[in-house]
Image 1 (cartoon, protein in one colour):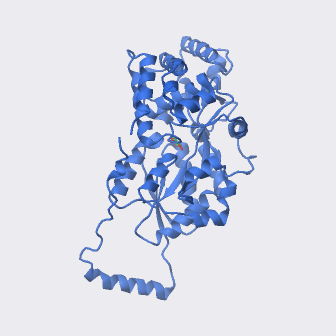
Image 2 (cartoon, protein in one colour):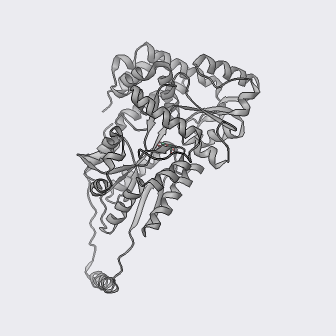
Image 3 (tube, protein in one colour):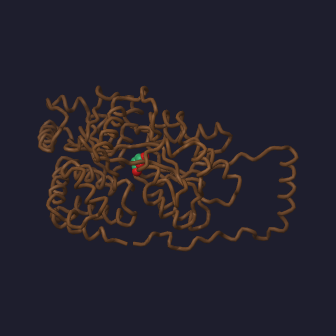
Length: 433
Ligand code: GAL
């Protein structure tokens, strides 16, 4: 599958019968100059933050941008993980009318850069010293040909397991550390009439769960060989087969109503105690927070079994697009500057469930899960066990990622497929163009 933007970028003809209108525009411009007012920039922002916790976080961004005198034009496209949003973005760019900024991340930033549609905000980055504020693994993703074209907002950890504390108490269990513990607890929960694992049947959720299982079963070195280097022998080797079999074993502990369920609905099942556990990145914490639930009391956040020493990172970012209206540039720069500011980093991440991407921030207002995330991030960075989330667009190019989604989703749903067959398909999918 070639990147859908292979269609050449063709700005649409704009001057349709313009003669008559020119006079009026010139007059309006003259009036503006005379009165000394400059038009507030309208900044259209594409994002996919529509769940409770996400929408609250997006609202923070809108309000802070408007305080700078710009107008926020909301371009929210529902759908966790952003697949729908990416389709909407492609349509808009191909028609020559991109939004001013869009929530994209990882290698997709480079692909958009290759299309020549991104705009540099390097002057803001230089002025504010972004190179010093960001870990290099992250700043390099934000640059195209050495210039910042995107700004990161957070660090989400993906390899988490969220647990309803009461449900765990009911079966007298401790948070699972190993996969054996996990399946024992799942068995006990099922006997007690509680759905052990909440999951939404969408391909990105299957992929994310599998990613966490693979890290827990195989460790960080295996994960990197398979999902960063796309090493064929590792993709179809015995550790991958074991990871796939472990992933499939979880299915018997999930409910029948999962098809098409959104991730936040699955989180809702854990919040209410209808289900006991969910594998999900820490945007799930945003939902617990909105529901006024407290960590270590109402719910627990623990790394996925076997993945205690590793950290799967997922960094949200906004890339800036070339737009026709030059006024928008001011708004784009305001937005770029805002995203990395300490004030925004704190309040946004408190709502979003993530931790600040800006280094050196004081985290005293953050809860125990965020503090653990920060400590584990540093530890993983030092030990070389910090790995990018492939299920969340951080490392593999979109075409291969999509092919992996298909393999994992199919394997989860088709009980006749063996783990070895799925592993062979993963190795083949890694060659997708
Ligand atoms: C991720 C994104 C997060 C979160 C999640 C669910 O891809 O990075 O910010 O919103 O999807 O929508």
